[in-house]
Image (cartoon, rainbow over all chains, first blue to last red; front, side):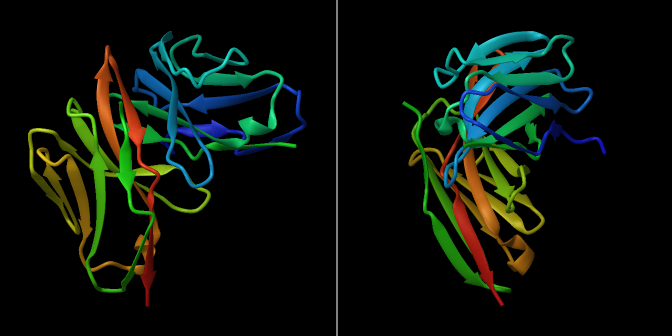
Length: 110
Length: 113
């Protein structure tokens, strides 16, 4: 399979715990995006990487969120001290031009 | 500011055409996209149109862009039950090297047999 993959697909965690998600983009894509999608809404942009450089961050990305793309290939998104409001689908997309999305990681914070 | 709006629901009968509408506000949008999302899945890119075009056709899909009114539509010909999904319109605004997408809230298309 040569599409964008994300792991895990589902994560249930207790409030206050840290979680980390992984995204593996399409191999030749140099751009990688993270979005968040809550129920009944479209995805909202969180952050963008070109190769290993994080070039843009949304104001939605609070200090508890950090994203990395250390070798310009896979990326991780970590949320520290999770809150119930963090419950959402976290989507990764990669691109040369058009963005292709992975299946997402659904986070539930109890 | 950026805002993309879509109607929430559309029902059509199998075999009919579906037309999903979208309005956007940012006149500097360079590309406009249609994505499809099935339950529990990520977004599938259906088609896109560059802002200097007014129409694009791709098999059963026709995209119309009225840049003056900032109105985008997606027509699906001969709609099938497998087309039932949520359809998102998105505008792309280039910011440096990024091309972040701003999405509407999605239109839930239900195809009735």
